[in-house]
Image (cartoon, rainbow, N blue to C red; front, top):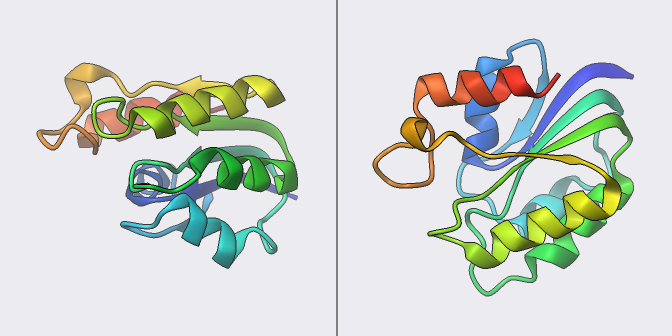
Length: 134
């Protein structure tokens, strides 16, 4: 079992850079469906798992995919990064429901550290979120 794993999309890439001690399995622009299809069967076992998915989902059943991921996640603690509600309210709601179902914690990016695109974080924003997932 490793100490920390970061899984997901470009936001996970940023979290991984802020937590270099973590194993990161992330890809810029990836949807939850594609991430699960490619990675759900070989995820690491981790004490702490940080997941960011849903921001790139359009017309995808985000909830089914992230629930599948979560069922297969072997971790002591799981943290979800809440996707931008303005860009993807359905994905944000799905993340909140799945996290609640499994007793996981949802981390909300601080508004003052969200970039101009309304999705990605500033360097400081990634550091703040990374420090909250312990």
